[in-house]
Amino acid sequence: MDIFDRNGNFIVTVPASAELSDIIKHNGVYWSICSINASKDIANAERLDGFTENLEEIDEKANYDCYGESDLVCPVCGYVEDDSPHESGTTYCANCGAELEVEVEYRVSYYPKLKQMPNILEV
Ligand SMILES: [Zn+2]
Image 1 (cartoon, protein in one colour):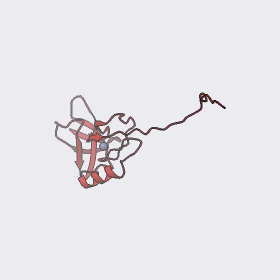
Image 2 (tube, helix red, strand yellow; image 1 turned 135 degrees about the vertical axis):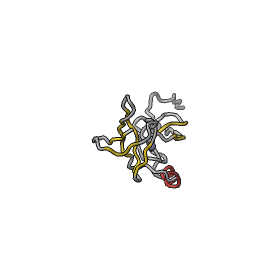
Image 3 (cartoon, rainbow, N blue to C red; image 1 turned 90 degrees about the vertical axis):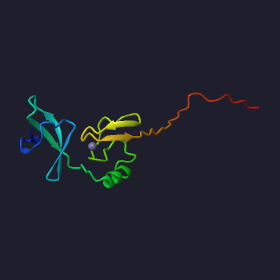
Image 4 (tube, rainbow, N blue to C red; image 1 turned 180 degrees about the vertical axis):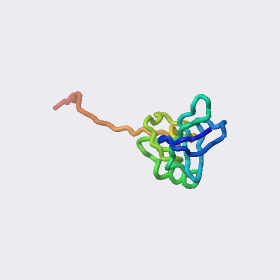
């Protein structure tokens, strides 16, 4: 299967068993397969600039760059999820496919306005 970038430039040939969920590492650059043609001999891939395999780096990103953000940020590739999950649990990065365990925290804010005063007994 021949892999091309979004501009149609040839990148590399990979085994025909490659799937959409696979990440390609070629010359130190990571690529995410975006589409595969029907005969499975041509695929398009998107370059993953922020992707890392370094587990210490991923752990550091998870604890600092991705921690407590208002959107889900993938600690593996840095992708910011447009449609972040609303419940805690397992999810997958839409960009690199990494499986992530996500804890969702809701912050509650109160905006009180007077609706009715209590009865006042002046004696
Ligand atoms: Zn990712």
